[in-house]
Image (cartoon, rainbow, N blue to C red; front, side, top):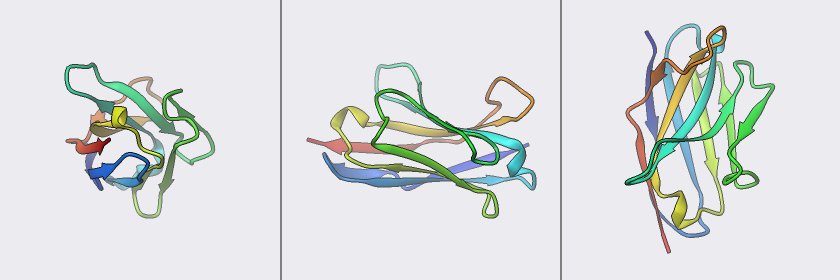
Length: 119
């Protein structure tokens, strides 16, 4: 069982930055690929970014490429999402998720953290 706890959300003006963190309660954090997803009001949850278990590969949604950076620190069991040049359309609840490296689906999810970008 993996518990994920996100933090770092808040209210920021357009053009500003936020850094989200997701702490995982597992001794085998390095066995999990990690991802960030978001869900805006009235919309389906969407993929934002992912990182492989040792951090050697990352992927991003087109809407955040060049503005967001995902990273991880396996010694701290934590994955991060640095969000720069924020736009009002980035407003959403952001979730981190964990996927065991042999599996194709994310099996563990955090409770989410709200990010609100004002114009």
